[in-house]
Amino acid sequence: TQLHSALQDHGIAHESVDMTSCNAIRQKIEESVQTDGTFVVWIESPSNPLCQVTDIQSVCDSVQEMRAENETHRILTVVDSTWAPPCITQPLNLGADAVLHSGTKYLGGHSDVLLGAVSCSPLTENGQWLAERLGAVQTSVGAVASPLECWLTLRGLRTLHLRVERQCQTAIKLAKYLNGHKDIVKCHYPGLESHPQHAVAMRQMVGPGNDSMYGGMLSFEVENESWAMAVAGAVRVIRRATSLGGTETLIEHRASIEPPERRTSPSGLLRMSVGLEDANDLQHDLEMALEVASQVMISNK
Image (cartoon, rainbow, N blue to C red; front, side):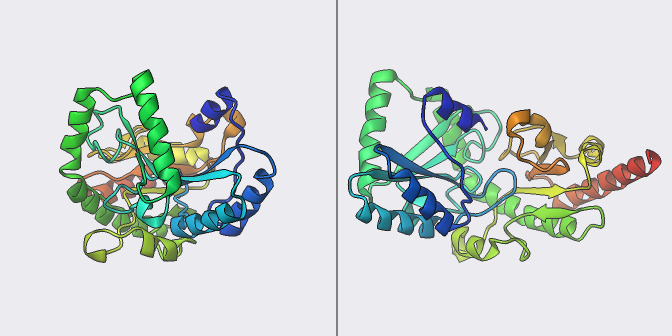
């Protein structure tokens, strides 16, 4: 929603499309290129908060085909891979022109950095074109991170693969627990076989040793907003906060922080960023919170 506001403020037209469907993306591009201009296919994978996974390579291949058919238009592919840091997914190797990361999240990893990073592909014409222009903006406007932020992020990168590996291991354990719980309507996590893009995630989200790593982010739905608030209020080890990618496990009710006019999250959905705590402690915390919430809802009927 913040991206929508920023684009609108700068007079940039934008439309939403189902990013899990290459056919829908292609159709939207075909409609858009009827007008002049530069076009960006903006991919967020996994998506926030439903953990939908876009087949990045298929989308990039499809866009490349359309470039050949529409040589008068520049069509770029940009991937926000904040939820799948480099030790899990490398969008530039999958054909993307640029990849974005919020360094505040997994790259920094300690919830003490304000930094964003964009890396342009040296392998694509559009990536090289974009790199030149971003470099010019940095030189003329000074849009660069401070030395301290860069140092803190570099510090975090040294342990990135270790942290993410632990977070992925814990996340799949919690997702399987939640997926089988009687009070959970639905659990969203790419590592679950029931996830609609599980097959895509298996080949795209790959860690060291070619083992699948599905990320440290998951979300789950309970019956309604009151139930979700009761769960979030009953946890003790897990902290109630908005950020993600740090050492602490965080939980938040997404719908309550979204603008009313652009609310997209289900009312009963809770998003969780898995940290580095003991997996059994986190599962026990969720078990107790779900039991407390169930008793609260029963007593209020």
